[in-house]
Length: 560
Image 1 (spheres, rainbow, N blue to C red):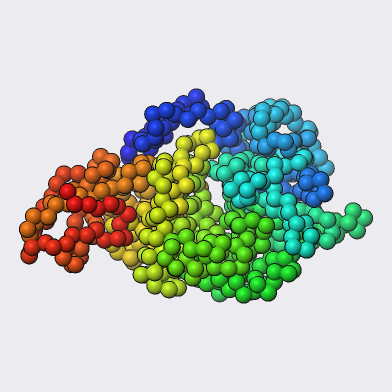
Image 2 (cartoon, rainbow, N blue to C red):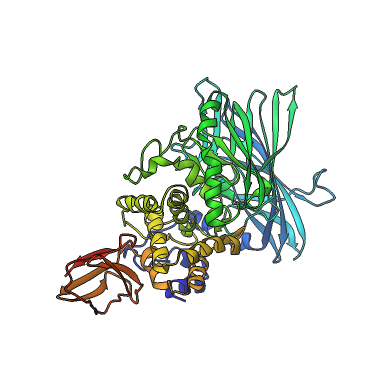
């Protein structure tokens, strides 16, 4: 176990969390507020209860851009306590909390006292709740939620009109958290074991689309509203819960996948249907490629759907949102600059990849967001490899290296809801591409990718678990490798010096103990070497005219 993980394990008090630093972090440490600590840590008020199920019922008022609703939280008590933390971000407010039991769920129950502290509500029970008890509370809330200024990168509600003047509304909350629009236990470590029911009430002429399967639609003629009941039966991360409202039409197909028939639904605005029927042929192709690389789609019970939204798109579980203009590339451009990025619709491929990495395997702490984004970035070139060629897949991931900044470590700061550098995308994808070539066994690499999704199916994990799994399954110790790429901004430099028929080589700009096998081309012939920090010498069978590092290794290489 490296020292970084040891620090995380022994750090136990809240006052220390803001002082945690990365091995390559600047000397001046960032200060975090008490609100950030409450948002990002597993507080005692969260740790005593295990989330089982949510029932979210919300009415949306487009004219006033406001919400009113309830959330029933079902939980099991694992430690005795009487104070609960529920998160709801200002300016939304909780108006009442009721303690429910099986006998009183439909008829109310005793009211619980609650107190606000910023974006946190403390809910007090009259006495400690006994261990093993299955309990429920109902939380009433209302207000005008934060409006997203730049969705999906800034969280909140998007209130727009479509091209025909109809309301077009959507939620997005990655990073900022689901509590920006509904009350919940807003931390990644605990997902509802039995899923979630989502009831959305909207004006009668509109349609509301959420996660899972549509179970029922009811109309209130007096109020001129419709309520859409969606049901998720699998665990779901909070930021993956979404609500989309518009003048939607639906079409569907069946994908015959690794686990049988998968229902695939498409929800688009009525005037988008023709374009969507053409462009969304990418969806089953994406599912086919990712079932090959990662194993069966993780949510057959909840179906798969693409939903048109008024922003670029996001990875909401079983409800992938789409706003890429019904064209290939990323908003019509190739991120790699190689031409390969124009062969596929970036949003369909990338956001669907998150069904495996992000939704199936979910991070416990925002500092480990790379688990979601690095693997999903890497999934883009796996899609290319599956449907086109290995050469083009390599061109694509290597072409994206120009977007790497190396401005800060990929891993963020733990316990304060702070993810690391945006390099978790392009650098993270190239890191995993390098891991693959260090292992140098594509069958084993395929087993590792599928094994991750099977071993950690529907679980929340941390970086250490992923690192250890890859090391164990590959038979290669990747500890220092991950320290290098995740916890530092240094890129390994392979230095070499040719002298006749010999070449001396070593690594520079590396963390202590860094050494992995790499492929080099000596006079155009492939050779595997294992450099370290100490010089080594390779004896060749003829004078050496050229020495190059294989391009698939994200490292620098230069002559002394």
